[in-house]
Length: 444
View 1 (cartoon, rainbow, N blue to C red):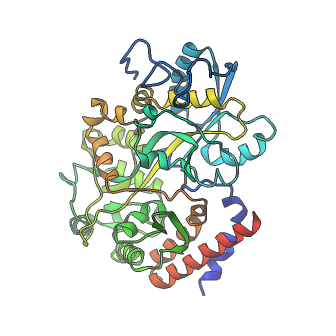
View 2: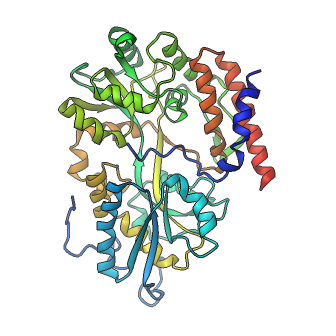
View 3: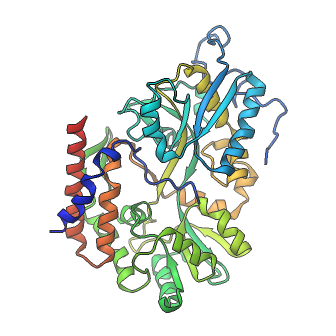
């Protein structure tokens, strides 16, 4: 049936997807707080933060390298902010920091080639641990309890595998409801209210819509499946059961049927993508969209004070949509010969002061708990909307097998948007994911 159509495309990508991290597509496109004149490398003490607990902090320091190398996402605005922060590290330690811009989605393959040849970085930037540990591309880091206390276990867990921490959390993100106050003065609290807005304000002939989002992108669509009781891989006290995939179970199917109903009613046009959603929202033709903090700078420039952010509306079952929570962090390369000082740099980059400076420069939310207490964040209503939604979100499953979910679900959601039977499509998607996981295991 439709399985062959889905499988034909996916089989060609099996080797490529094993090189990807578990998280989804890169969403990255979308002022200094001098709290002290002597900013320490460790936000809790003036000693290198990578010093193992209970050791002599000075005697156990290895010799400083002349240079540390990091791979950063290739975004000009972010690179400029990173240059400013790393210059202070150099001033304090005498260690130069060389930044090489490489797109996050390209870093894994590049590291697998350059790392063994001695040309890789000490730190690189990725959205979660994914398959990095399984591929042997990262090594564990050691941080003090004082540093660990500045992050939640969820954010640290997103960069952990088998009980080992492999990186330092730098950015946390989820998506929420962005709305235009010129079209709707208040955010809808429930899905029924959102659908009423869509009924009243949608006129496809004029490209006007009550709400829009890229509903065939699994990253966004999952919120309604998870909020309806769905699961990706069954989770228990020991982690995730990869053999138990939940897309064809009742909760996920109900969430997918809700999305299909929006296409059927004409609330969502077929074939819409993120660029179209953002463009129409900027033009004032859409009352509300589902998007992340990466889109704020662009939308604020167009909508000004009419831009607002709120949590996703509550579902009919009383649950909040369960948005994905992504954690991007600085990972320690398995090929680094400077693990001690590379870890020290990672802790420095993610301390409260630098995390807050990064937020002010890029708009990306920090996972550092001290930074989150700053008025620049707590008093920004746009940021508050996202932080409120994080209460209802859930991190990506930190298993390598998640990389085999994205393409099958993208195809499944496309078929669902076209009106095909939801249960049948989800059954086929689960079969395909299982086959991809088996193939990946056979190729290892």
